[in-house]
Length: 202
Picture 1: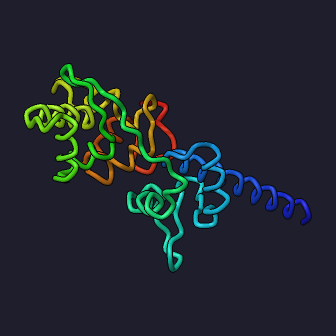
Picture 2: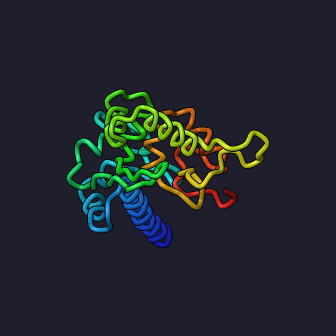
């Protein structure tokens, strides 16, 4: 009987450690550095549950939601923004012009947000043609558009579900902006929405 108690205790300890690691990985996926992820785990860990396959967020009234649900990620970005660094605009070269545009603004513009599209246009000096070309190119990059006869359609260097470019934050952004696109990208990388790590076959 005592051996069963020890086994249960050890299993419980291992599950707590595994849960803490999954929460830490989730926090890092939201953009936290190592210290921020530790604070995230210690202060917010009680709101998560690791099932062994999925990380769940325990919300108000005990309702459990998949932690990768875009609304959960948005909640943390709104309520705990002091823990999460703002995405940095990466300088990019487009048709001979260097521009800096926040990736979240580009995602919003691609999702149809007119204000975001205006911000992209301002980055191009209100050049409508350059803005439209840029957004079209970004859309193709993000949805994995390749030649129709390519057997690896969707497996592009920018697929956040691919093993090479695994990025939970970007997965959430894509899923929030266009869930059908997110499903296609995940499938193209032999993964699925909600996966906790990249597919080895991707």
